[in-house]
Length: 230
Length: 377
Image 1: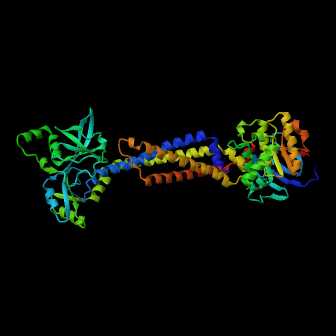
Image 2 (image 1 turned 180 degrees about the vertical axis):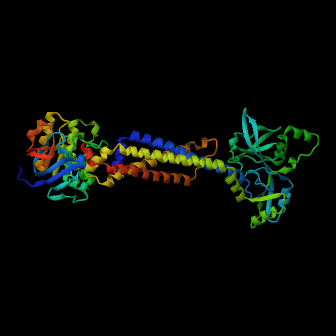
Image 3 (image 1 turned 180 degrees about the horizontal axis):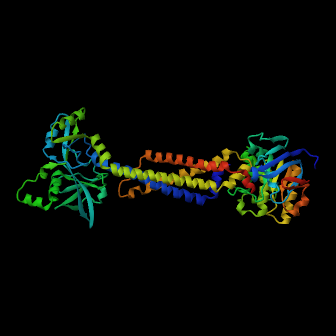
């Protein structure tokens, strides 16, 4: 798996908050490469920098130093090299949240299609793609339901469908199985692995869920903002 | 995909309730505008009714509406003989409190000479005054019906016709009677001492005086020249119709007009703050969703569109509901509520501006939202 194309290349990335006595170094000289088809987990205690690293890769947080290359395009090298970071996220990155964060005023199908609408797809094509994804994730029978009426597992599968809708090659997941029982957590991880393989995407997951550790290609440990081992 | 409409549909009941609340507020704003206009229109109604060109009043006064005016009845003949005058009529005004159907009825009594200017312009029901005494034409708002009788002073008058929109600046509905009846009524209402004097044979000065003489000029005649000529008579003053209207608006109803105007300004300010708060709160409640939208790649225009469209829909709905409500209830107000299309469109413009400004606050908050908020970090 590690032989595939490098989709995430993080070099010497550091991130600190505050200055002087209040300075907190959240990331220190982090190097990380993730290949196509790879599913990795970021592990570590609270405050170790997992979410900060996820936010840096997701172009939500600017590093204090270092270089970030996503899908062959260097997006940060001392400064952002692209102004339209949201477009970058729309095209290259899919997010799966701990709480599914579906838009409550849209149906399951619309929650998936909204990404495609933002990406400029036609309504018909967007709906067809959303329908296909929901079918693939076996939740198409709930396509017309609002998020409030979905079970935790159904909502998480809709959220996964949304993350995959625009065929991103980088999928970032923050505790995607935290709200699920161990059986469903295993199913979700199997599904993500399958999708990563099929779409030649990579998946970076922040998790504390030991039940699913065996579903990852690599476990990356962070401690005090540094990569402890890989 | 229109996110604004989808969000509204999701919380439709709450949104409709908010629109209805805003609509009620707009009803109050529109009614105040209408009352403000009605006050001016009412004040001008009695001046405009005789369709006069020139008002001849007592020298040194701005009568007969702004202050008391008494001129000899013979002035009418003198004015009617002046060059350029087509017709002239003497006219008298007084407020009286009459009793009708067991209730007190405040009336504005206009005495005029049938066949001369000063009477009602159009009778909407019944006929005009046809005899010299004890007939009256009443404004419909008096509640009087044709054929009914009402005691004014010592005499009972029969209602022979009805008019609409005739009232004084205070909103008291008008009744028209003959000038001779009006002058007699005025004498009867004098203090007891003056009636005793009349019984002894003393001639009442008031019996031969009227409040004003109104004149209509012949086509092509110069109104300014006529008023200038009248002013040369030391005991008389002359006002053009425009001057008379200006006196009423700037003098008689000025305080009430400014009072309502200031209240209206405060009401509009309160409405603006309420609208701004509603829109801002609506936006603040959606910050997590806005963060999610930012995270999944929604551009600023999508988020701005979501906020601004909802604000405009809210404002337009509130304005529409307010307009429908005020048009439904305006005729139930005791005084006239006059809404001009200009006023309604002006309010729409103000609401539009407030909504855009209020959206600006919401948009500002939305633009500051960190997309990482959606991740729970």
